Image 1 (cartoon, one colour):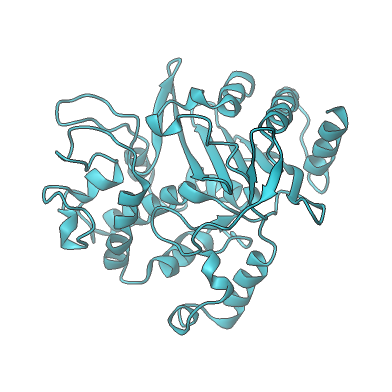
Image 2 (image 1 turned 120 degrees about the vertical axis):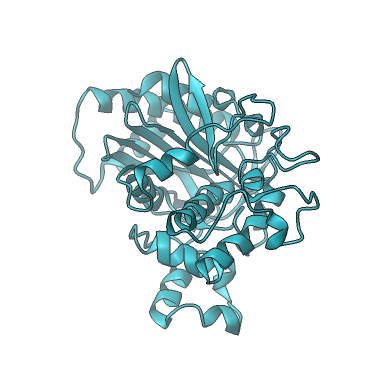
Length: 352
């Protein structure tokens, strides 16, 4: 345990101008919890980043992105980030709102027939309130969220992955991210979306992607299959904790959206009857001990998991990526209670 912690600390500090302070002592304590939890859950490879006041305090990895080849996980290890992709789709839709090319209360059946309820609007799908009687209840549903893909494409007038690349990945200098694992072997239509240099960079990223694992009841990791390799508004982005830290910094500095527009995403919605729900527009939103926390998790069963937690009032963010489902599978995060995650609970308790 102590050796693992030392290795993790060396990876985090190496090559970085770390400003030692009380906050860093808190991070070191939090890190002990992360390593212990990683071991308990049998997570083969884990990468992490912590930010404070728009600065990366530390980033690095523990364990292996490829167990068989003993390739260590690092801050620049690419993972399938699963439903963290939803937050990116939220940014793209809110950019359309700012440009005046989208009305959130438009029925989504103008764009797609994937949502059967005729009264369901874009807002309902974006806030996971589109089931049965739209607006009546919250029910997290990644499959329904994917129906927002043609909405992005219509209001931005370009294919989803191309808009994602242009409006977020490029603007935030996310050089180790790729809009879809299927860019490993793209078809001719997809090749036409990117210049040769960009496509080659994406393929270099994907050549380094973490290997997925399933972990049995005894904590033994076995190689698993990759999830479906395409991309839509719900899932499919490949990224690293370093690039997601750049994404977080861009959100905090309002590079993508005006402050008031970003606030819309980070305001909890309400049902038709006025009851609050644990979700805004593409983000979970939760008041914890009087503090608003925005967050999202990702889960591909038996392969990948992710967690991003942001406490704006204290200026801190935690990002975790794993090559098993250990960050999310055992915890009922879809119900909207972040404290169900021991990783998040430890972070909020320790890092201030």
